[in-house]
Image (cartoon, rainbow, N blue to C red):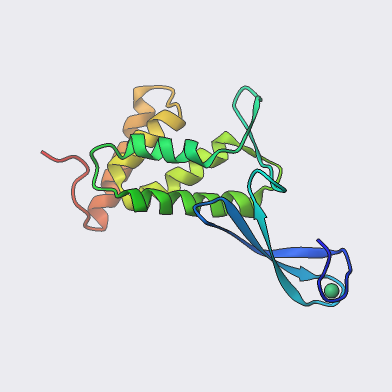
Length: 163
Ligand SMILES: [Zn+2]
């Protein structure tokens, strides 16, 4: 990116965040020559193309809607608002864009979305995790659920399952 002050072409990204529901990435950059900071905006689908590498190594263009769809499925009939789902996707995206600019594994996306969902709704988290993590057997799933229940009790949150 060319520095608007001294026209040098060397910079480092100091901060990245997505806005406009993830369609625009705002990057704060610092020129390595004159040390001044400037901001660039990149629109997904134009100058910015991130690819998702799936488990079978197939590469597909990054698609925020897929994260949203996965979250919506996990949050079905849970007290999680559409706005909260967008926020979880925002946070996951920030993490994705801060760490990758060309390719990201689908596993990283899943783990990131899961991590932020966990804070919002434990039941939805378990649902999401059971799909994304592809638990090898029931034992693994039970371990995960027990851990979440223990944590919930520890910090005085409501029980995992309604009776
Ligand atoms: Zn400069």
